[in-house]
Image 1 (cartoon, rainbow, N blue to C red):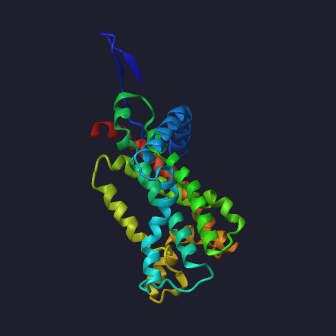
Image 2 (cartoon, rainbow, N blue to C red):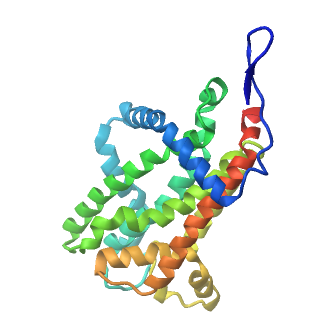
Image 3 (cartoon, one colour):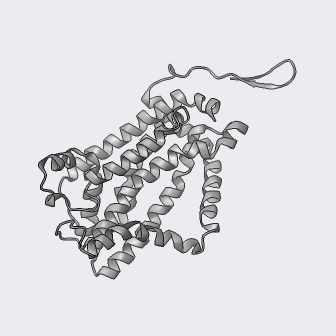
Length: 288
């Protein structure tokens, strides 16, 4: 609530919002805030888009080259015989490229959203732009990266002689559950991270470890250790990576039903993340 005091100065009063609805209320509030701030989000996206390539030697070509450099270490270990991911129907270069690109949507979304408020600290202190809009504005750059990744994957497919299926055109939709999962975690970290500064680095390191129990760079069926295999089977991110990759590369996938159930669960997690965000957002300005 805002009013003007006796000296003519505007005063803003923040009231507790824990009683203002539940999870559905959070979704409705976020939709309203994003709609109102859509022009600001577009401007921030364009600013960040230009800035991330302005001082790079390769310019916009870096967007195509970056995914290839991300898998260079795995390919090197594979070709010199150190890494033994197992034999499969998909060439290993294609396998690791598609898998790592899909996996990258998770830490990419988490980092973009969790760091969104810290990056826009000046706007938070000086303007009344909804904080959720500032937190989510960095996701625009992530979706741009997803589109660029489709071009890079196409280049890899052509160079290896492996023809992708038409599911490649649906790649943004197939990768969306990973983005939603990262967004839900990022929303919580964006507010809790301002209170406990070491929380975000801890979760980031944890995600790096989780990647190794997700079939990103190896074939699930080749794992012999029963305990590790059980962890992979119960890891929901295994299906969020493997099913889209199989559809893109082979045109069919096992456990597609499990993938859809987990995908719907990520939508629920975003709703919960938004509710937590709105409960704690007023603490952010105090900690910046």
